[in-house]
Length: 208
Image (cartoon, rainbow, N blue to C red; front, top):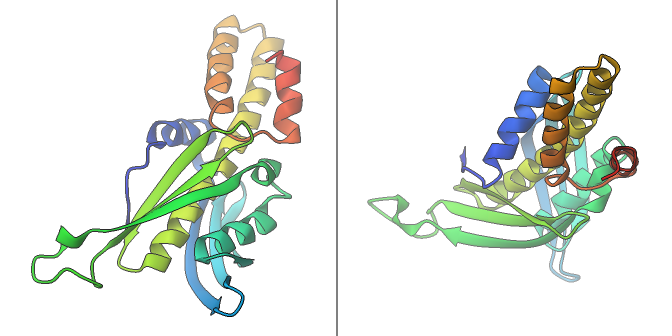
């Protein structure tokens, strides 16, 4: 399995620059998926590790239910992380697509072909973000694409709050050069996150 280059690569690079070693990284170790054909719902239980911001390989069991594995995993991740990162409460899973890369294998291309899953997440302002992943397993591709979306919004909220603290420090030290730089960075970040109560309060203080 390998991650594709998502259209959010430039913003992810900015998030990594702002957060440094505290950037939150998520990884799925295993997943159990159960399909209920009678009521057309899917349940998922999986183990996720995360590192960054004091966590060193910490593990969480994610359980979710929805219409399909992506929807179920999305709701499970929201339930686990939304209290800590309130902006996750304001995003929604809006669409997904599946493409089989039939030309990826020379000898045979069919059900064994890599699957590319693209998911779309809509934030509180109605802006849509796309995330994708390619894997031999359709389920794995969908889970990891969803995981990348959650990782993105967790880090975007954290980066925005981090820059707010840095901006206040620069203002107190009368560093006009840093004030302008940090203000510009926050303006970029706020367009690429989803609003939570924390971010809304900060925006009000900034007059945005």
